[in-house]
Length: 169
Ligand code: PNS
Image (cartoon, rainbow, N blue to C red; front, side, top):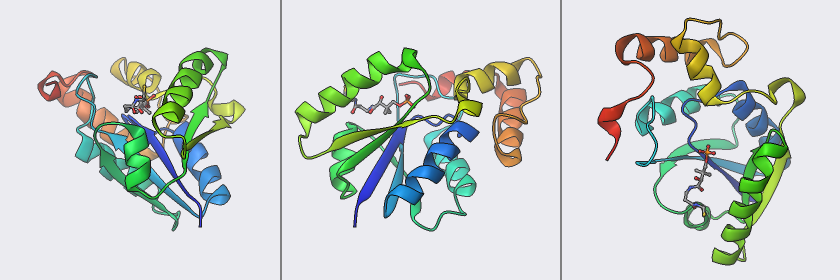
């Protein structure tokens, strides 16, 4: 039984994340998506909202669960009984940071390996940040995320704009 964790900000889930999750769910027995309760960033959605959005978007995968975590990803992996951390790689620009993070994680927890999944070509350009930018200016989001996610993004941006300053510590 191999459990993998997929940590990230997921603010909010995109088709790119869901593509990685679908492929990870086929490759591993169990996948735990971990949504970082990240006080340093300026999230659009609260961590509880991100967990709900991701849970709804992944309900078709019986071996995928979604939760939030604080602190180090390797601790989250240990707590989840995982020996694998999954990260998606979109382009070579992601690589330097991701490699450094994977190597740091390996020093912190030699029993946990990072597995990189090459993002499918059709989503190579896509990020939550790009989706929020397009949303802010009223662009078409239908290529970026499922309808329920888009509706949540539009509602949130209409009510507050892209940056939820109130959630910063
Ligand atoms: O979706 P993101 O923002 O690219 O995800 C980054 C994330 C959450 C995977 C990374 O920031 C992370 O693991 N943060 C928790 C703290 C940690 O473990 N850092 C890695 C050691 S440097």
